[in-house]
Length: 403
Image (cartoon, rainbow, N blue to C red; front, side):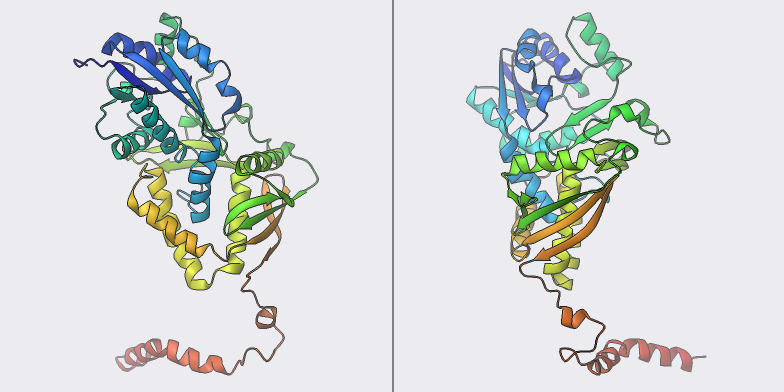
């Protein structure tokens, strides 16, 4: 901390960490702080943010509405790729970081900042996601990561630091959970969740009711897609942001989208997170149902391979790498026939398929039927099996002869 900076652009959320970082940067680097807050759908968490940032010492604050860009340029491409990290995590925090960091860089350059800063801990994934974006878009700007420099080692220490300086915060020793909310999901970490044997407290959840308290009658929902992109809910054409908001409401009131995951962080350790993604859970299920109709076997199976890689790219913070762009081009081509509607019955946390239709469905009832028809000559199967089984037949004869 020997170097001094004139002006530092801070990714600001108004939470515990970034609230104490503003005075800390001023005390230790002698700089002005430009706070940059991104509206990615966290709703009431933005209330009073401007006043809070100025009260804690920020010279300026920018509150940027990035919801449409977030959904169209980050959420939907990841959805279309089918990317899910370690079978469960729909990447809600992961792909929010590059869109925030991108805007942070743009404002930093426009306001003459000579450094960038964030409130990510030295143990987590987010430091990687922010800083890899910085390296891609502003390699000339140094990065200040307070959690890797100061002597604060826990959220309890951070609360004490805030209280000593009379910085207003909502976290307390009793309410120690770390939350991250955006239009796609709400994540919960810390507190009793650090013990993977403990059950999450019901009071912790905000986007979804418990399955036990969900309605006793199922609710049906239809989602329509064009080339793999969702465009309508229950027959109503919707823009991307209200579409996700509507599905969050529908899924949330039916207890859909809760995930409890012990995951492998990019930095090497395991962590436990609890996620609520009601709308996203429905959207992914719908896309998969349409793909089952519209993609042939080889395309479908290969997409599973690239979905796994895409999930790692997003989770590891490598959004602005050429490989991600190349996979997007591949997925765009693959999704050309994937248009149609998926129907689900939502019941107490379950998303149950109730039907699917597609304009370019490869499902042929005549071929699929158990009734013998003219479209498929069963006698052809004998030659196919003989050719396919030739290596097995030869191997079996060799093994028999060696006994």
